View 1 (cartoon, protein in one colour):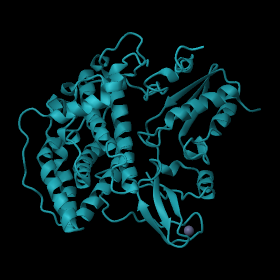
View 2 (view 1 turned 90 degrees about the horizontal axis):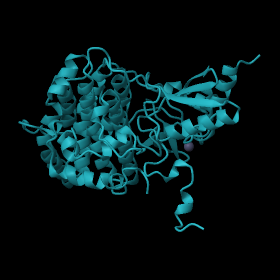
View 3 (view 1 turned 60 degrees about the vertical axis):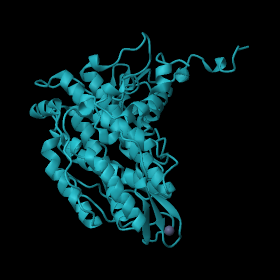
View 4 (view 1 turned 30 degrees about the vertical axis):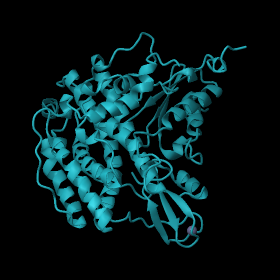
Amino acid sequence: MNDSVYDGLLGGDSSQWAFGTDFEDPLAGVDTSVPAGIDAAELAAYCLMLGDDTLVLSQRLSEWCSRAPELEEDIALANMALDLLGQARLLLARAAAADPACVPSLPAGSPVPDEDALAFFRDAGQFRNVRMAEVPNGDFAHVVVRLLLFSNARLAILSRLRDSADAVLAAVAAKGVKELTYHRDWAGRWFVTCAQGTEESRRRLIDALGMLWPLYDELFAAHPVERSLAAAGAGVDPETVRAEADVVLDQVFAVADVPRPPLVGVRGRTGRDGLHTEALSLMLAEMQVVARAHPSGRW
Amino acid sequence: MVSVRERAAAVAAEVRDPEMPMLTLADLGVLRDVQVDGDTVVASITPTYSGCPAMATMRDDLVHRLTDAGFARVEVRVVLSPAWSSDWITEHGRAALRAAGLSPPGPAPRSSGPVPLTLGPARRALTCPLCGSSRTEPVSEFGATACKALYRCADCLEPFDHVKEI
Ligand SMILES: [Zn+2]
C-alpha cells in the first residue's frame, strides 16, 4: 500500500517531473558552435533579448485564453502565443548553448533544461525584453495594437536576421518570418476593422494606440549588444529597419484612416538594460511560481 | 537485397503525425533523413512551426517504432534549416488530406526581402473537400492547430480545415 494515493504514480518513468517528459534539447543534433569573430557572451545576450521579447509577449497573449470576444479570435491569440513561445524556447536554448554562464544555477541533479532555467529562474531585472511586450493586457483593441506594432517591427528584424552569420539564429528567423507574417496580417486586419467599425470600436482603438505608442520607439532603440552583433554580421541593429517598418505601419494607418501619433522618443535605460515596469515582476511571479517552488522538478 | 538503412528509413517513414494522423512523417515532409551509424539509427526531423507541440511525440514515436522493428539504438536529431515548408507535403499526403476532409495547401509564398502586408481577407481558390464546391470563405486564419486555417463552404455549409501555406 502506498501512504499517499499519489505515491503509486511515481514509478521509474519520468512523468513525475514538474517539467513534463519533454526534456530533450530543442537543439538536439544542431551545430551550436559559435562562429569565428562573434563573442559568445554577446551572442547569448542578444538571443536573450529577442527570446525574452517573445516569451513575455507569449505569456501576455496566453492570458487572453478563454477571454477573446469570439472563439475564432481566442484560438488565433492562442496560436500566436504558441508560435512566440516556440521562438522563445529556441532562442533561450541558443543563448544557453552559446554561453552556459548565462543560465541560473539550480540544485545538483535538477532536470530543468537550460531554456526553462532561463525562463523560470531569472528575476525581472535580468529580463531583456522591450517593455511593449510586458505591459498588462487591456481590451481587445489593445492586443490588436500591441500585436501590430510588435509583429511589424519584429518582422523587419527577422527578415534580415535570416542572413545571420549564426546559423541557429538564421534558422529561427527564417521560420519566425513565416509565422510573424500571419500575426501581422491578423493584427492589421483587426486594426482596420476596429477603426472602421463603430464609434465605440474606433474610440477604443485610438485609446489603445495612445497607450502603447510611447513604447513604440523602444522597439527600434539599439542596445550596444545589438549594434555589436550587427557589426559582426550575426544580429540586426533595430534602428536600421525602422524606416522599412514605418512604411508598413503607415499603410495600415492610411487604410484605417487613423492619424499616426506624434513621435515619443525613449531616453535612458530601457527593457534591454533590465529596466522594466512593475507589471513584469507581477507577471513573472505568476508565471514562475510553480517552477520556483520545485527547482529539482519533483512534486 | 534491402540495406539496413533502407529498412530503417521505411519504418521511420510510416510513423504518423500525431495531430494529422492521416499523414505519415514522410508525407508531411518533416522526416528529413534517416542514416545508420554502426548500431544506431539517426533520424532527423524538422518542426513545422516553432512551437509545434508534436515534436516530442514524433520523436518518441520514431524511437518506439524503430526499437520495435529491432533497431537497438535510435537517435532523433532536430534540423532547423531549411525551415519546413508546406510545399514539402507529398502528393500522396495531399490526397490523404483531401480524403480526410481537409483542404491541402497551395504553393507557399517565397520571400527574400521585406515581407508584404496583406490587409484584405486571404485570397485562396479552395475546393470544399466535402462537396467539391468552389464557393468557400475563410472564417479564421488560425485553426485547431498552428498549421491550419478555418474555412466554411457556402454550398454544403460545412466548416473545414485548410492546411496553411508557409
Ligand atoms: Zn461543401
